[in-house]
Image 1: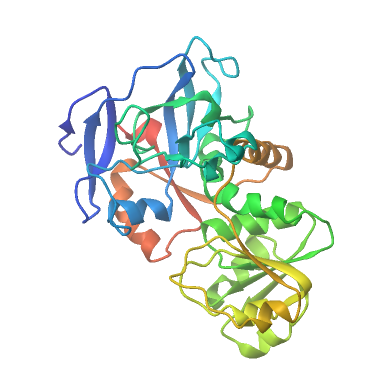
Image 2: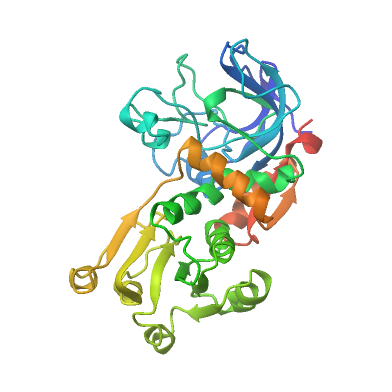
Length: 355
């Protein structure tokens, strides 16, 4: 194993500078409080956010930085006030670990939109003034509100991507009533988020069409994921053949792309939701005004929706497509993620490789 730096009871892998290179790092977690759950991490999903913050893409990274916000594990200890969990439970932690729990959004279980700002699972200032550190580590301590039960029998490795990729598409699908059987859904992009949108769409009874510039993804979309249609979005004729045929579109693409051609595919009063982060959004007003269409945005989800989503996946046997890796492979995995060379989510086997 690479030489460790730092001191403390928690072993993780951290980036030390904007190169983003990760290596072993020891640090301390807070003592378990009355409302806290401490979980021994077994797996952690690899999200593009891990690339962005380890490499200081948003110019706010605080080093040493331990990434990872698709965390699953087993409860090792609970605080004296905790009623919803017991030692041995399978649990997950997502993209944030605290909020004010008092504002209108927290009261409506939209904690990710907390008026005072939700506290991110890594690279945020925690309530004790320390910098939060994520799931590329041996354990984590979290207030019980931000901990989610994973039903018995649901594979822990497959549960990890639900905590970010899954909830990011599930939330807007529920908000905009994209769970109506027989309706039509377009999914732009077939990566970690896109493939979950396809799976949810099929579970909801929707007719799902995947849009991608990569012709190589046609067979994956249709045969592996069960989509009803595939469109090469760089083919104008294919695009125009679907004019005014879709009730909904989930746009998971983060690269810059035109919006007007996709909006033209919506039926009258159709809805397109943006969950990716392109550098800009440009569209002609007529693309939405003339068809009474809506363009909306969304960002992960609240605690209630997250728990509901996990239970929905368990009940309907919805499982992300994953590639399990050892923590020692993480630097290569992040490079592959940048190149979109993953089908469809890396998941780190923390339990068996973080030593």
